[in-house]
Image (cartoon, rainbow over all chains, first blue to last red; front, side, top):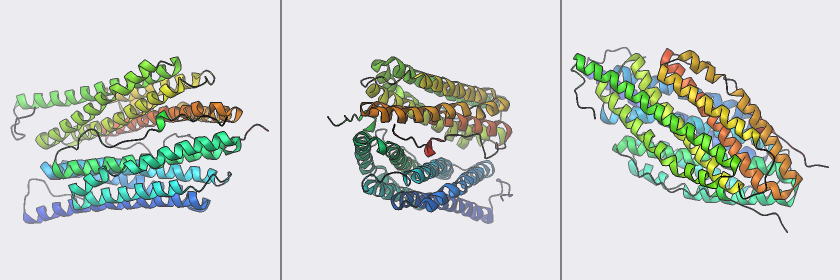
Length: 244
Length: 244
């Protein structure tokens, strides 16, 4: 808990301030690590039809939510007591924004895990390789974006920002594939619908990893990335026709 | 643009600070108003099969994104130059959080509008009354949440926070209905899938209105609402069987 008055600028206070910023980065890194694990476990639960693991993911989401609140409170205290400027101010604002993104990622992983429980009791539809691949890519992007924050590495953040396109490609393929499964046999409809939403969850996780990369880039350099980021979720326009 | 040094605490400066906070509230209210209109127009476009209106919604999303950036930059400047404390600090942090929620609401409205274009070229599935009703409810919740911020009315915020349950009920009904349409006739699958995602978009808009209400409550009173908010999206567990 912070008790020194902000006016006292002794060496001790300055060191303690650095420590607080370090602690803030560590909290965000810990939250990111939890979310990575949730994404990985949600995908494993789906692919191995492991309902126990899926339930564990659902049960663990509260930890991520609690960390978001903790990070926000810590940031508000730092803003009030340290009155930070320039790069420090940007880091604190970025930490709040990033923790909101990670909290959403946790929600998406929990939602995917819930649906994985239903899918495990339905007919198997193909290999689900696309899901594994998608989950792996977004998990890597999330990890790299958080690492970029901890290391204040704007170039790494920019790489993550440009790495979301393959995720969208896989998602668009899954969307089309699931509609085809539905049309082939109405008994596939429940599973295919839940799989569509799971794919959408992973796609959204990828978007939030991209958001985090944007925020980190801004925090480190103090200016925004261009508005038009690479984005190719074309599923909103997909039309599939039933077999003749 | 802010140029006064924060140390000068003359009456003029204090008044100007009040004006800046007022301007901040107005910016958030303007952003919220734009998002409300996007939600209403996306729903109208869907129900009337009006592709021109749907395209207009897609085209207007950039205005909301631009306002988010403007609000964030304004908040960072206020934090740096005014070094606000207590309620003012909470308002500024809340404005940043709320603008992120509104930006997401804009994205969901845009996505619903995109899908409405596809749906308008597919067979009609029932009355879509549920969609109209859902859109109306979430739009009201959004409006009330933003009004609560502008008026610093914690009680109003708490009412919005508790008003999301009917939205979830309608959503759960639509989910089941769409799966049934798919099973009845494979020619319904494309439309029903897009309608499922549109319903999900409106449901997510409702969640973000609830988030905004939580943030406003915190900004006004300085303490959080309880963790367990009323929440009953049961669609993740829905199973529908094909007709025998």
